[in-house]
Length: 577
Image (cartoon, rainbow, N blue to C red; front, side):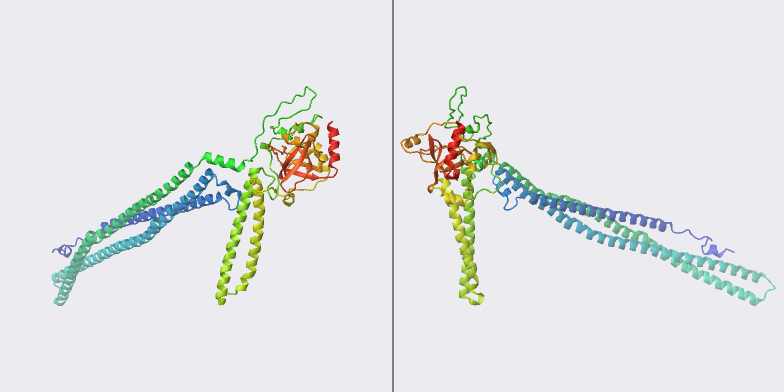
């Protein structure tokens, strides 16, 4: 009899596990690793761009600090330096560098918003999408594995039922062949065999149905579900690759967008450099430091081989009685210096800047007058504003008390009056320098701080080393001991008159070339004798020796009045002889 296992198509062995499922699981693992690597690459690129933006911000900050560091400080000497074209070009460079720094800030802002921010959001979406796809893949894989297990269970049940039906059939046949078995037992065995046969038939039907269902599910799994999931993962990965490529293009485009503006900054720096005018700057230096002094003339030859009085050229600076007298008969060496090398006074100078050369003094006085006029205008503007406010208060008492501004108005009036007096004082000095008005009086010179009362020891110190106003030291002796200078034409007027007695001494603060009739040339540091004080016209009459006298500007000499000066003068004459 044919075995039921062969009848029902069962071969007695269980099929091996689904190899496709195992391979598919391996592919899912590989894809999961690859897509995670792609996300890591994206996050690495985000980190790179973020660090680039930080570098741009730090660079811009450093550029701004650098520009600020070298900007001229307000109300400082540096502001005056920016009248030169070279320093103005440097200032323009600093301003352009500030704009240049701003473009790097723009780069940082655009990269943060267009790349870092967008990619960060995209990575979060990508992670969610990736998680969803692999969840669907695992779910499909679990479903096909469940169907496979159901098929295996149905198959084993069908196998078991077939074996049971086969044993029941064999037992029935054995009972039917045995003559000693009752008919009832045979019938019972036959019914049992039929039952087992029916169960095997049912198991076969179930197994067949389960197998058909599994094959359908397996077909859908491998030809529909898994390909769709793989396709979605592939599209997701391709979008990631495209997105990172677009971000790299944006990275370059952000830089490219600011290149024209950076180019304009560099063009402006070049333009500023080309605007430098060396001739103009040189002229500004000349205007700033020119003294107004005339250059010294030639020094005449002094012949020491003959016993004669040395004479010096009228046109020379040493004839200005500064250098010539610094080499006495006693073998002393000259320490006098020519005017181009005069040192500036140390510390604060007099109020009228009389310690400065004429041209420098004029500029300082003009600058002071301008500053005072600005202050006057400022005070007047405040006064006008308060006056209008008072008028408003008078018309509308509810807005304020008109009397509350009276005190301030009085203060402003006093300030304006003080400033005007101060401006008039400086304008007078300026007019003196420019020759528009008579020179200031002795009293005004005293107020300026130039005048210092000296006793007769100032005269005796002529033969010693003295410190000149410019800070240098010169060894000076009385001009009377060194030279005899031909008398000027102006001195002829006094030939028939009784010589005026000396009433004091004076020291020349600056070199003065007496080119006009009635004036006398003096050299800086020279000691002379006063025979007539300033009478208010700005001139003092002095004498060098019995043959030479004349007028010099009062502001050019420092006068020491002393009743004993005449006796000192005679003693110096004896020493020189």
